[in-house]
Every structure is written in C-alpha cells, then in structure tokens.
Length: 522
Image 1: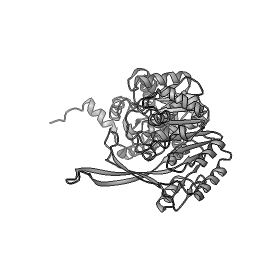
Image 2: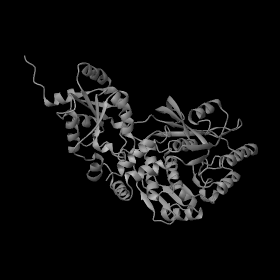
Image 3: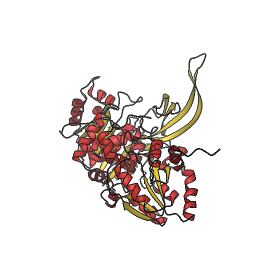
C-alpha cells in the first residue's frame, strides 16, 4: 500500500534537528554546494519583524537555518522565555521560508555559528548601530563569523521588539514589577543603565570580612530511627562553596578591575587550595594563622527538586569560640593600614565571628574614604552583632528584617521609619532594607524612599542573596547613582543569587546587564 502523505505537522517536525546531529547535516549540505544562511535568537514572540527578517534571509541562499537559545540560557528577566523551547522550535519550523531549526544548549551564538558554519550570518538592521548592541553580543558574533570565513549581513525591513511587546502587553511580569520597571524606564535609558554598570570598572576597592566556606552535604532521608526518633539519612555527595566576605569578593571581581581582599583563615591545606582557585595572588591579602579554625558552615540538605526551594535539614558550624589573639589582630591591623591607601571604598562584611575586633572596626570607620557595611545576624551571634550597637558610621549599608528589628528593639517596627532613623544615626548616604519576597526599601539622603518589588519568585536557595544584593548596591552607592537605579541593580543581583544553590557561582555581569536592559524595554 502507498504510504500516507506527510502532514504539515510531519513536515514541521522534520525541520527540527538536534544539536548533536546538526554539524554533520550542515557539513553535508555545504559539500553538496548549498549556500547556508543562519539567523540566531530567542524567538520568544514571533512578530511581523521576525517574519520579514527570515524571509529576507532565506533569499540570500539555498538553506535557511534558524538556531534558538534553550530555555535555561535565556536571561531576559522574570517570566522569560514566555514560550518554552519546544513551542519556540515548532513556531519557527512552521514557517515555509525556514529549512532547519536547532536548539542551542549554550548562552550565546558562538557555538551555534561554529556548529552550522554558515556562508552568511544574519542579524537585524538595528544591530548595525553600536548604541543598540550595548551588551556586545554582535561584536562577539562578528569575531566568530570572521574566523570561519563567513559573511555578516544586517537585514530586516520591519522592526519590532519581542521584549517590548511582552513587557507592555503580556503577563509574565507581576503588576508591581511592571509598574516599577516602567517608571524606571521613563527615567533611565538602556544606555544609562549600561553605562552605570560600566562605571564600576575603574573603582579601587578593598573587601574586608570573615572568610566562610559553605559546605552542602546532600542526603537521602530514610525516615526516623526506631529507638531515638532521629532523622536517618543516606549520604549522597558533598560540595564546598566560597561564602561570607569571600563570596562578596567574587561578585565584585565580575564588575571591578581593582579589588583586594583582607580576611583571616587557618592554614589548612584544603583551604589554601580553595583560596588559590578563587583569589589571584596580587589580590590576596589574607592573614593565615595556623592556630585559627577556618570557618565552615555545613548544611545537610535534601537533593534539589525541580521547581522547589532547597530543603535544609540541619547545620553544623566549625568556628573558634574566641576572638583572634593579639598578635593576629596586629597583623590584620597592619595589613589594613597598608591596603587602605589609595582605595575609593571599603566594603566591610561583619558576620560576628570575631574578626571585627573593636579596634579594627574603629580603624575602618575612621580611615575608610567610603565605608559600605553589611553587619549580619546569624545563629551564632544572634543578639550580639547588632549594627546600631557596633558601628557609628557607614556611608552605605544593607540589612534584612530581623537585623532591623534587633537594631530598633521592636518586633513590629515601621520599617521605613526605622530604616531612616538608623541611616541618620550612622550618617549614611544610602540605606537598604531587604525584605525577601515582600520588597526592598532604599533610602538616599532625605529623598523619597524607593520601594522595589522582588524580581524573582522562583527560589532555589536564599543563602547568599543578601550578599549579592549588597555587592552590587554598594558599587552603585560608591558611584552615587540615583537610589532607584541602585536598588534595581541590587535586586537584579539578588534575583540571580536565589536561582542557584548558595554561592555556587558569582553574579554574572553579562546576565545582569542583559536582564536589566530587557526589563527597561518599554
């Protein structure tokens, strides 16, 4: 019997090629003399501009290949991509002018171009303007295109922005986020935002604080023991991450060319290996003391489930009960005296584990040209590491709800009023209160408060989010950016941090810039 004719759905499916099979397929097409044209993007919302672009691209050769960024590598802010990768693949494949579609498991187009090896690579006409390509995407793509000997073409007679259409007319942003970003976009252009982030580059900074290693021990909970009713778990694996002030240092490294790190650790061999991995020798000003226990916070957790926040069972802390002895404090003081010369600002992380002796606190408050402070409350120091009791000066500071309640001595404070009072007492130019899933309140020298909603609601792990916010907000404060823009930048950093376990990786500057410019596209 004759086979049934292919349906339109069959034809669409046949156009979709896996990344693993694509290279061989396109190599064969090139060998047969076909001219291959490629266009790459997210293709989140197909609009007339896309159709015109692809039709014009198809006329430049024999085969039009469209490559699409996979969901996990789309960094356009919350709720993006609006359409998942399977829907985006089928939407593009359904267009008659498209020959093949490939899902690319990488964040940029470089590997896609290397895979397809096109004769012609197409971008929209708007990318000819350097002011439009603020993130440098096309510059990088052009280098790859030139390396493989292809042509770069800018095409498209009709222009629309998928991001702008989605921001204005779709529901991927919550009402508060849309309102905040729309207002911010009326005050700052994409160029303003980009230049603000780039302005951090030439700052000279000193990061000071306790080095903490966060250890995640993953266990499979088996139940309760029969005799003592203790949680029983089977050990699966373990990972160690850079936490505390070291996490902030790694965030700062992504944005600033000149930064040094002053801290205290023990002399354990595994610690030195970790430090060498993360701190260049010319930035390492850590005092190492064989008698000191390097701080480790070990959390026993269940394996991460898709779409759920990490479940933590209990924690064990490894740290000294006493403050460092006088000879060690003297070494730290001498190091600070040397390193504080010529810096624009000091970022001080006080986790209340003994490093910030009163003498060192006083020295930094008196000598730092600009002091950005984060004084944290945790299980080890609860009630003893209160910012209002330990500090008299901070040009900028961040704290969370619990820390403000302790500082104000109130269970149910008026958060904005108490933040303002604390800011005045510390003679601060900037002050931020992060309230997790509620909002972040930002103050700047008597101006109206900035209330910024959270930019990410799908939380994996909140550990490290406050440190990420502080890192970027502090840079904005040193550069004296408007408080609304500074708060937005901090929130973008925090939104990245809650999507990963602990401090598994530092904040990505390209992702922050890409997400911020997308959210300001109205």
